Figure 1 (cartoon, rainbow, N blue to C red):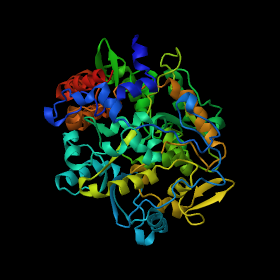
Figure 2 (tube, rainbow, N blue to C red):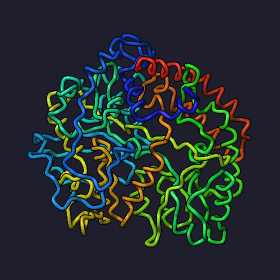
Figure 3 (cartoon, rainbow, N blue to C red):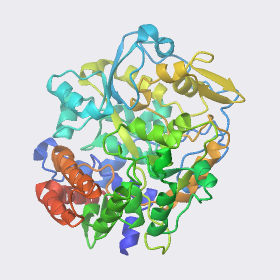
Figure 4 (cartoon, rainbow, N blue to C red):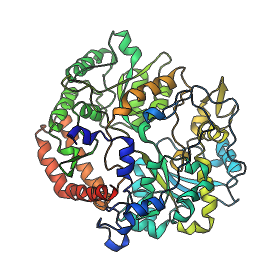
Length: 542
């Protein structure tokens, strides 16, 4: 296998390799005290017995099928007569207590939230949601675990010895979901097979995965209308052309900076740096060690020093870069494909979106985008609620109902005439709807992503075509979804440390040559151990 071939793993390859999450040798079972040693529960026989059956939902025909390209299906209209997928409310009348995070402002309380009230009626139980901003969730989760204050349903956060924590705090769902057992919950059975990698630890299913995959691939958004006004194309063929484009877009008189935020991943894509990890000569190597890292950082430092990146890029909030893109003060911005709806909502009336693919830095061809991870998070059921496990699974099954169903339409867009307007098959959230519906339901359970962008005519097709162009050749992380105890304990800290050095180099406080010492420290502080554990997981999965 060539070096490039080892990087460009297909989704099918990722499914085989990624099966090691929890099932892999790197999963820390109680027998090895979290040190990442192998267990018999991780062999091929155990995996085949545990993994839920996959039953694709096919009652709604897409306008554009993404199956051939391993991307989501796209829809131009919501079906005029949505399928009613759930015949009876899943609840049992008792409160369902949920702990999860959100990336949006906290919604109005249930007493002032018509959508939440209607959700409780449709579920058949009052849903009590403990929402925490995503940036604070890890600390909140660790505190809840230590104080034994987890919700009946909880998003699994990062804590030391995660497999042992789940064995102690979460219901083993294997008897309910493995093999054909999952068919009792048809919309959980519709979740992509590879997503379950993140929910299986030490041969047991401990949660429901929330799938993402290609839709979470990071790309560079461009204001096509602004580029067009200046006679500039939404495409570049080299790093030099990209710098030139940024120079022409930047206009100090208009308070315009080419880049609303730092394009770190886009630049690394130009230099064919791997997606976090790569297999080389029989071992797992971190992308941090790639020889082109210093050159990529030097280019980022050049963009910063030249004033092409917005000066608040290192201090602002996530919403700020969307605002800059929307009002034109930052016509280029990095974001995932899943962020397209949010960018549409901030866009000026005549604004247009294009996606800029990364070129090879030297003009020799295309760059190498990083494929999004298959799963964004996992929801577990507390052992304290084990007597209600079927009710709680039925509730999560309700939340996983796919596009085209009446349940999905309500879940995403709320009450017609109150939370959204519907014209020609296009539901559009009102201001009230945008506020009320932000309950973090998509971070409890969700169906496979569908490309549906009713806010602007043609947007669904544009997004689909951009994904079709970029995602089939995107680089997968060969150990995505696998578990390393060292990464779980130390990964956040050593990542912050290397991130600080990255920022220092980009902003000119340190030279690119400082990267070598920073990576050496990262390896010594835990990076090498993480690589060792993840490689053991990868080998066990083959």
